[in-house]
Length: 273
Ligand SMILES: Nc1ncnc2c1ncn2[C@@H]1O[C@H](COP(=O)(O)OP(=O)(O)OP(=O)(O)O)[C@@H](O)[C@H]1O
Ligand SMILES: [Mg+2]
View 1 (spheres, rainbow, N blue to C red):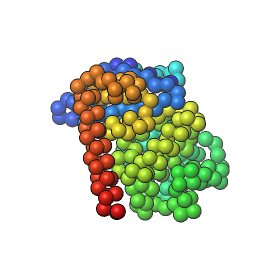
View 2: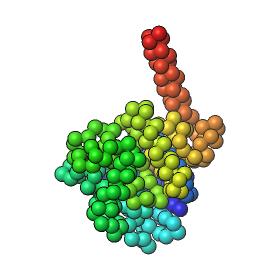
View 3: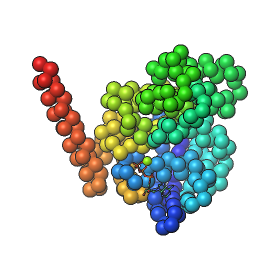
View 4: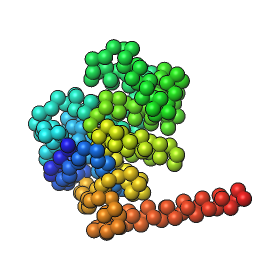
C-alpha cells in the first residue's frame, strides 16, 4: 500500500544537514511497522516527508519517490493531497499540544476534521466523534466540550488518536505516541491502534526510540541510524539475529531497562509484604 524509494531529505539552515539518505521500504495492508532509532536519527523527518509537509517549508529539499495504493504521491501528486493527508493517512504527532488548536473545543476540532473530508451533518459528525471518544475511554459528556489546555497529557493524547482515526484512514503514522504515558495508558493506546489494524485492515507506522515497544507490538522493524535505514525485517528476526552492531546496541539497552524495571517491581513487592 505504501512504497518509498530512495527518499532523501536535506535541511538547509545555515549549514546543510542530510536528515534522510536513500531510504527504501514498503508496507502492506494490516501491517504494524516500527521505525526505531535514537533521537535525531530522522524518524520525524520521515513522517513529515511521507505526508509531504515539506511542501510548506522552503529550506528543505526532498528527492526520491513515494507511492500510496498504486498512485504516486511524490514528486508528482497523482492523488488529491488534502484527502491523502487527513483521510487516507492519519497522523498522531509527537507533540499533541502543538497539533491542537488552543482556541477550539476538542470535540469540535475532531468533528470538523471529519466534516472536512465527508459530507456529514453537524449532528451526525458529533455522534460519530462521541462514539470514538467512548471507544478511547474519553468520556464524551465530560471532554467533548473541553479546551486542549483543560486536559492532562494523557487525555490530550487520546484526542490526537481520535483526530487520527476519525476518518478511518488506511494508514496511521504515529510519532512517539506513547512516550509521555504511563505503562497502563501505553498499553491501552497501543492495543487500540493494533486492534484497528486487525479489525479495519488499516496499517500502522509506529515511530519510536523504544525497542521494547516495537518488540511487543510490531510485525516488522526498521532501524534508522543517522538518516540511513541500516536494518529491516520481521520483528523476531531482527531481535534474535540482528545484522548491524547498532541494532544489537539498541536491543541490549532495551534489555538493560527491562531488567532494571523488573528489579524495581520486585523491590516494591518486597516493601508491600
Ligand atoms: N526543520 C529543521 N531544520 C533543520 N534541521 C532539522 C529540522 N528538523 C529536523 N532537523 C535535523 O534533522 C535531524 C533529524 O531530526 P528528526 O526530528 O527527524 O529526528 P528524530 O529521529 O525524530 O528525533 P527525536 O527522537 O528526538 O524526535 C536532526 O539532526 C535534526 O536536528
Ligand atoms: Mg522526532
